Structure formats: C-alpha cells, structure tokens
Length: 477
Image (cartoon, rainbow, N blue to C red; front, top):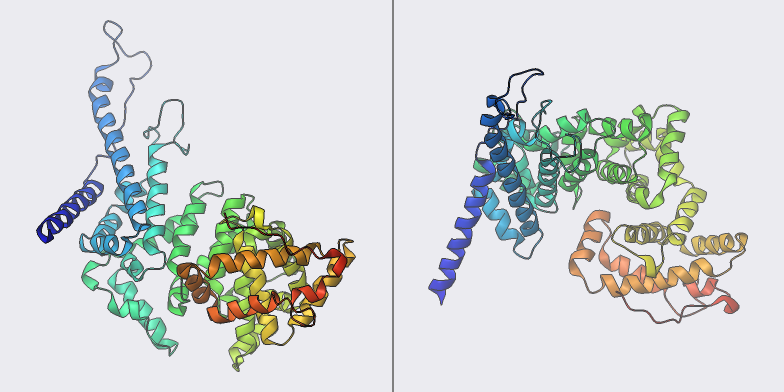
C-alpha cells in the first residue's frame, strides 16, 4: 500500500513538472498571419504563398497559448485547494516563479504587434483575446500564490530581499521571519523580481484597461495577512501610493470593480504606517483634491469600506503612541482628522449597517459588517459604546423609522456568530488583519446581543418595545 501511494505521489509530481515545463517552454510569440498587399497576384483564387506558409505557425502559437492558459488555470485551482502547501512546495522546487519572471517580457506581458493573434470577430483589446486572457490568468495565479503564504517572497530577487532586510534594520524592528526563511536559490534572478515587474506595467496601464482590477488584486495579495512595515515600505518606495491616488483622484476612475480593488490595496498599503499617511497628505495637498477623494469613498461604501476600516484602525493605534513623528501626522493629515470626528464615524456606521441585510449578504459586502464592528469595538475600548448606540437610535428616529436599523444589526450579528464561530480560517484572518484578538471580537458581539434590556451596551436597550423584531429564526445559507 505504501509503495502504491509513493508511486501516486511521484506520478503527480511528474505531471506537475510537465505542466510547469509546458508554461515555461519557448513560444515563437512574434509570429503572425501576413496578408498580401493590395493587388498582389493570386493563382486559382488561392491566397498569396507567404500567407499560406505562415498560417500553420500562427495556429500553433494559438494552440500553445491556449494550452498555457489551461495550465495556469489548473495551478490557480490547486493553490486554492486543500493541498495548497504541497502545491506551493512543488511550484517553489520546480522554480516556476523565476521561470515566469524570465518570460515576463517575452511572453506574459509582451508588446502587441498590429497583427497580434485575435479571435475571429474580435479585436486585440477584447477580453476574449488569448493574449489578454493569458495575462489575466497569470495575474490570478500571482494572487493565489501570494495570498497569506510566506512563499510570496519568491516573487523578489536577492537584491530586493536584502532591501527588505535593510528597511527592517533602519526602522529598528525585527526582520520578517519568512524573509529569513526564504531559500535564496529559489527566488527570481535578474535585475528585477516578478513583483517589481508587475508594478512597472501597472503604472503604465491605460485608464480604461481591464487589467487594472487584476493587477491591484495581485499586488494586494502580497500585503494581506499580518501587516508588514517592510513590505509596505518596499512598495511605497516604488511610487505605488501615488499611482493609486492618481487613479482615484486625478483620473476620477469610474469603474466600480477597479475602484474597489484600488481602495482595498490602498488600505493594506497605509494600515498602521505613518510614512504612508505622510505621503498621502503630501499628494492630497488641497481641499479640492481631498473632496474628490471623499466623493469617491462615499459614492459606494461597499467598495471603500476596507479603506475606512484600515484608516480607523490606524487612527486608534496612532492615538495611543507617544512619538513626535506620529503626533505630526495626526495634526496634519486631512484623512485622519476626518475619520477622528464622531459624526463622521457615526455616518459611516449608520450606512454600513443599513446597506446590508442577512438575506443579501455576499462575499463582496460582508466586509461592511466587520467594518461596522471595528468602529464599535474601538468605541468599546474607550468606554464609548453606549454613546454610539444612543446616537444610532437618534439617527433612526431622525429618519422616521425607529428600530429598523438596530433590528437589522441584531440579525446581522446573530449571523456573524453562526458564521465566524465555526470557521477558524476566517476568524484568524479577522484577527491578523485588524490586530484585535478574536476573543475581543466575540466578546463585543456577545455584549451587543445581550438580551438584558438594562445593559447600556446591549442593542435591545435601544429598541423600543413596539418596534422590537429580533426573534425571527434564520439559518446561514
């Protein structure tokens, strides 16, 4: 039995290696169909000879690109499965990441010629184009590879890893353990690692490009998890924050998907980082720019709520630090001053609770519930939770719908208990991303759901009897 299992594992590894080889094998990507000039002679109605001889080669290229697409897709699926760590180990050992880095300009992000391969009835900028689909699948692979895994540092080269170490040393903070544990023989080679190459093409991408969303998601995945100052500074030094703000403010991006990905990335980039807030204030240096930024945030809170959460968490940490640099940022940064106002927090809190319901919760909007909880947890730390609940009650009455918001919030918190108390991975993500222990999350939810109407921190204390509607049963679907 052990021998059979061993043979199966070796067979799987052989198949995996073959797949990696198929991605990294050279393709004559510059070939394309050549049509004869107008008036060129033809015999018996057949096309010019040069077109006939090059057609099979272009078809071969199309076939190889489509095959690489399929392999990239399979790797993405494997990286999201139960054997994720084993897949990571194999990708590292077979040096797929350095291989993709070496092929980045030649294959992955090569420049299109006027006659680039396209499907019949489409153009080279269409999302159905094999070239564009290959790029998107490549970005999805980077996202899956980097997300919450220490192997993400394989996207850098040796010089860039040394830069991370130097950043930690200069800031007098411990070096990231995953950086120390990275096998230097498996990282990217050349002058730039894969992450840096991605940043370069990201900053050059046209405003209307369909790649912006996937590029931002891939870079954000590098920052996800426990916040790393060195990782943030590595990206800040390469102008990422200024690029994001340009896209949000100066180009006034209209795509909801792109805006959401940029807000999420901006939040991870700035969280707990004083230098990032200084850079933000330097770029958003006029009231006019700041108002455009706020307009983008408020236009869709579902899209921007992760940024609101990160800024709120950062403000709380900065306020508890005794440091001249932090004090300077607190006194000068428009964004921190705006978020620090109780009316601003209450406005966000009211809208975050109001735009979601148990029946309409999705992977996209459930973050609004957690952001509202962050605001209330920080209020609880300052012994201001009853104040915030009273203000929510007053806002309900001002809208002429007493009880509608707090009843909804009560149901949402019951859903939260059913979901997060039974999913260790999701609860760990909440803890790592907020730097608030999950036990404090659970305690706060329990306090809010306390059935004692005499408790000043219980939701039921602020719902008048005639408007009470919290006893309905529901199950998580």
